[in-house]
Length: 379
Image 1 (tube, rainbow, N blue to C red):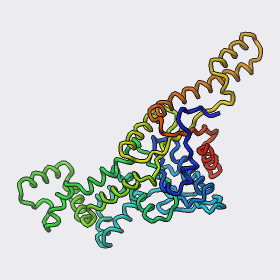
Image 2 (image 1 turned 90 degrees about the vertical axis):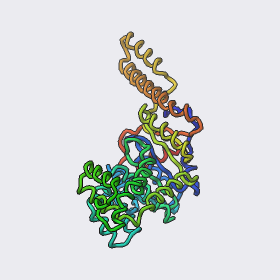
Image 3 (image 1 turned 45 degrees about the vertical axis):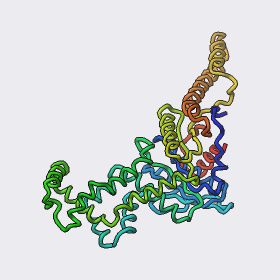
Image 4 (image 1 turned 180 degrees about the horizontal axis):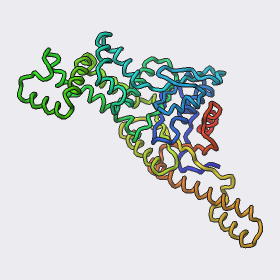
């Protein structure tokens, strides 16, 4: 049996079958199985519940494509082959290309000439590829696009492997504030007036521009000023769309699933995220605890197994049985430790249902493996 959790059992099938559930967001620390969980939910949604489902991953390791038997994923949803569509469901998958998504946003909200100016700007080229927060902001943009199209019964989001899972919620707001901020508008003022960045006559701005030039360098500041001028028509739109998507995440149509492994850091991260979701009034559906260990003879405790093994060893016979008991004792100690670690979350959030997914003998790398994980998620 899988180690028993003290929390109420999470009914994953009820969540997937509910037509009012339109978005499931899988979040948690890195390396806890978010990508596999998201993919398994997508497979079960399509096959068991007959829903037209898309899984959006922001995982640069491309594990989602591999697990679904696809050679690659890109910014456009691709249909996953080998899915049983007998119930009328379909499964599509995509991986966020943050630069391409940023390019699409620019193209949609400005003229072709202005878009060309923005694409050629060195500051934009760097920002759209590497700027802190861009990946998370563009994940929000892509989620908003998918939801606005109303093409999908269910969207499953595999959140970025950030240093902190909270970055998925915080980074878009930080980036939109930067793009719509006072500093950029100050830089934009000279361009609007038709004067050079450094030609304003006020002593206060002259001091400001010299200080910024000293810190950033003249060329970078020139690139930034040109970028801001070209982006003028889009100001306000970034924050507006981020706010719209944030409201979607607060809506009952969205369900957050926290994903963790039975490790202290991962469970602590899940608890931090749960506190934030509660504070932001976002719908927390449950906790998925991956890689929990099981024992076929749970009635025999670790202490009893060790004592029996010691007795057999002292008697000088049944050495293989004694070894098996020692292995069982070690497994029971591990399962007991995992339950104690999980209790750090379940005791703090007793109203949050949870499901334990047994550790698998090998990594999931195909649709059959995802079906197995989906069945375990469903209990």
